[in-house]
Length: 405
Image 1 (tube, rainbow, N blue to C red):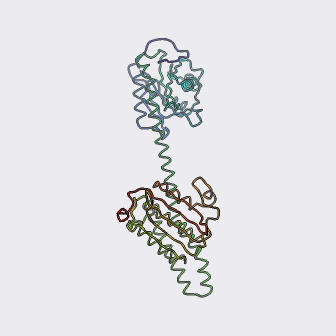
Image 2 (cartoon, helix red, strand yellow):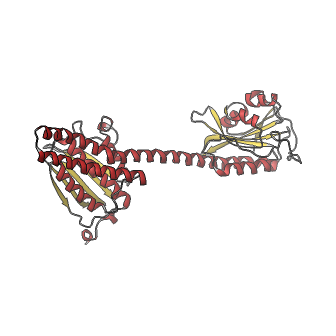
Image 3 (cartoon, helix red, strand yellow):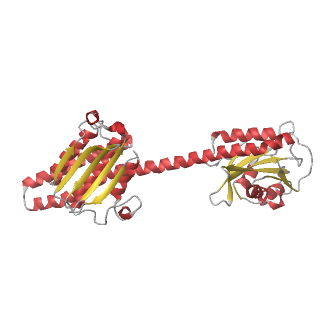
């Protein structure tokens, strides 16, 4: 193992001096920065403390490269003063640390003039006289550096020196895992927010759109003193608002609007009946899977995909007939929703873009819902007019027992 030196003096290894040190000075009790980023894993502090003790150092830090590769962000620190931490919060990868990262070699220095933060700390009275920088990498990619700080300029002993590279590799793996955990947490939070947007869309947006369609009809009926139509439209609005209120309460309580444990098949049947009663469109329900059972997540998502497809027919298709079909296909279940209306005016949207970026918010939500159970949703215009939505749910285990025989 080679350690590159810059202005250091030769000598044997030393251990930390005996006896307590003044707080905030060399050998101070280990401490971590108060505003350390969230990605610091709980084990990093303990790991760093052990390395500092093993090397006989008076302090140590772990820092991660920023996304642009120009700066090092403090992740963990032990045995350094608050004043020194202020210098360490965010520094450029220059000096001894920059050389360690660029050359992928352990670097050490006692002359701090090449590093503004260490030179400034020395001028402010820091007792650190020697620093070692060990590059951290993950699968050959530099991701950060860890430093050991000493109050003397003597070199490390051979028995400690040969351990620094493996320690750096292990620290790099630990740091990368902690960074990945944070990214996963961010992705999970973004997914929850998107899921909430989908639930709000399904619980409220569809009801509001239905109300907007019915209110002009109700106004016409009132103006024409047509009590029969007026009562009918009022009743439909009341039913939709009741369902929306129930869905909103479920969303607030459970962060998910559900089907009340009724199962997908029963939910689809009730959805079909509501559509027939409120849309004026003839709807055929062709179910070839009488014992339809899907995994819980798939049932919920399929229910809302079909509901959104029905809402699009009612609001946009200008159709007189529609059809919902459920059947088994190779490796899973397929549901088809189609109509004889005007079709998708901008053409079928795709996962890569197309119509999804120009107002097809509901269609985009349908595709996102399918991805949650590894399914697929495809859209197409029919040759003789109208549109078709295909929903594929993968998994042989979901085929009903009657269809297996």
